[in-house]
Image (tube, rainbow, N blue to C red; front, side, top):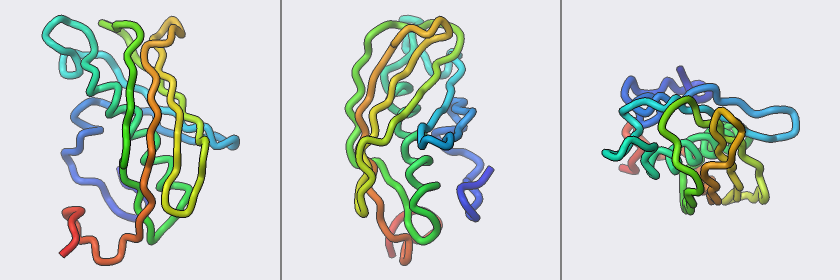
Length: 142
């Protein structure tokens, strides 16, 4: 898997959590999915809030990056996720709508639903857009 022309490392948070089915449609709506497994649950058997936040940020960061193109990166700047309904099995689908597409930041609203289409969590994300020159392979500036 790669983002643009750059290959992703073998172990990323997206891969560790099993996030999949990323894509953006012709209307600019971004989508992603997460299978519910023990690795994304908290000790009480329901999906951990951080897994929802990670799904929302991964979907919106990737969609922003694909729109801003080569030479720029998309990085989470703010993530506000509210949990509405517990989920303990199945999949969680995320649908993200860009509310602002600026030169240095994008604002997204994300709805996450269970397999029955019930709203489980909502997020508002701000994704920073920054030039990639001078960023080494570790993601840090020299």
